Length: 141
Ligand code: CA2
Image 1 (cartoon, rainbow, N blue to C red):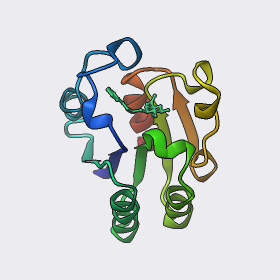
Image 2 (image 1 turned 30 degrees about the vertical axis):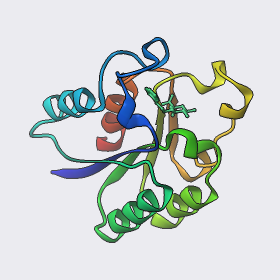
Image 3 (image 1 turned 180 degrees about the horizontal axis):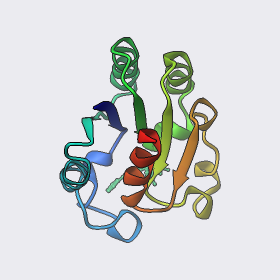
């Protein structure tokens, strides 16, 4: 069975608690439960969320050393700012799919640039939480 990691960046622990008009009503725990149910017996899923850039960088390094089969990453605001996150992804050798719940291209200009996308094989943006499942399906192919 393949092992995939799902990494979520800053403030995504607040999912479902504020701004439902942008991010919906489901919480991060709901997302994890949905994905575990959908991929039970198909993939081993490891979930990690942090509000701290360095912790996410450290986790990517550990996942690279563990040679997992792929990574789904919603870097949240770090997507638009973090060279460290981009370098961690690029140096990891992992197949990563970047996911955004909202369509970043319909939002403020500062969200329309992703520093991390060039270090990923694909970007899914605007499919809501379904984007995570779509990314996992792709990585399992
Ligand atoms: O659309 C996405 O998934 C984003 O990655 C979400 C980030 C944002 O900075 C990106 O531009 C796009 C924000 C995550 C914060 O999510 C919250 C959810 C509920 C309440 C507060 C924050």
